[in-house]
Length: 147
Image (tube, rainbow, N blue to C red; front, top):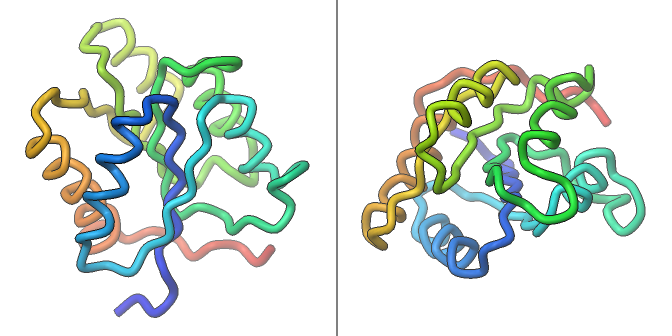
């Protein structure tokens, strides 16, 4: 049983998708904290604990949209996976793109999985709940390093 809350970082600029993710996680069986950043620059500041993000917790998992302002999600994914301190954090690409090139590129950049966001509200919520269930009840993740 996990006693500490699961730290989830959502990197998403669409307010509707943020709201849906918040709703899906609110009904979760697992205790979680959801942090949200709305662009790629904020995402890297959060992950590197710079500026306003000096005291934030290290995420246990990242939900990443590809189409972000200021710094594209592909660039964010590349930076995460090239950083020795961040690369072990699972990154779930969750985007509207069904483009085969985006899928291939995401895996080449070492995304842990790629999910196309459904348009249907109930399906979207089901997918978010399944992500959480899979990553925190089925998969064995390494312990977080001391900060």
